[in-house]
Image (cartoon, rainbow, N blue to C red; front, side, top):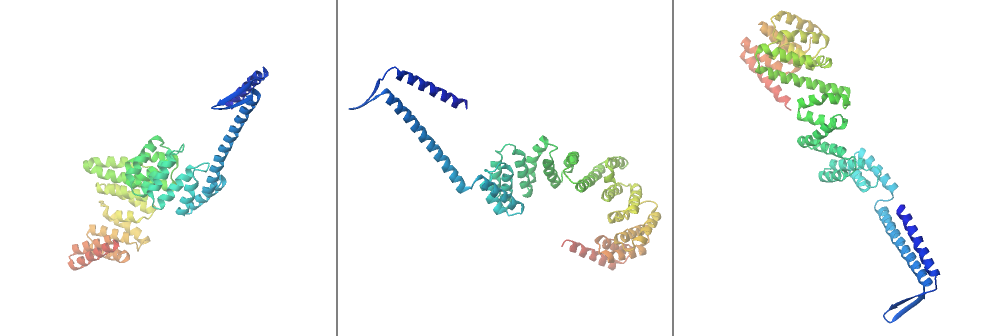
Length: 403
């Protein structure tokens, strides 16, 4: 604006000087070129210069306007008007959401540079290309999208999701890890990062980011509880392996330290209780496992815990059997409970009773463990043929479970 004002002021000054000079006398201008001459008064020469300047200015306006009109005409033929482009982009997003990848990519790629906020359209077009199997085109679109201000995080998130879908977890981890370090509480980054870590079974790293997952509310409460329980199970599994390198007398302290670190929801989970009981059993702490499993089953019936109860070895074996018989009155046809009864009676030396319980368990469930237990009981009784038949039945059940 200032430049244009300065030009007008300069033009008026030059015109005023010219008028002043012309007012001093008529004068004339002689232009000679070869043998030809042109003679005119200064007033005519001045008017001719002004006319030439006006003519050049008009020609410039025509040229600029013509170029602009031609560009607009080309855009209208190619893309349509801005309003039309916006409408096509909106239709493209609708196609994207209903999964029509071909139409979505065609509409979005032709209009994404003409909408007011192009980044979502770039990301949707890249996703459409990826879903069509055109990974290279998806990458090209993402590279173009990176030039938009503020696009780095969305583009990296989209690229990492593509890599996860292709099974390239290591490459996805390389992209997301720096984003997490820079933005540790950004929900979208945490969501992708936790999926990568879970797929990689990197439980220690997942345990480290769990507080951030909770604070950012990335997961629903059921999903959060599921992940929390899974982390507890893997911690018990790890401590169960680690304490094997220590003296038996030292193991319980490490196991209980992990158990006490769990919150109430974890300690009340039947899966976690079962895992904890199994770690205790593996480390000769059956006396601690039995009351925990018994109390839990009295409150909540859970088959894996019933199976664990049958493997607990305590001195008060008859009391353990009486407890199981109490449950049997309520669950007489529970094949897992029948299997546990068979194991308890086998330990007591009552092989005939153990055999009967095992036969009932096999008939009710066709369970592999029940068949193997029955074969072992027959072998202890001395009935080799029946033992081989039971083992054969267990082998058949094993093969059927593979299909």
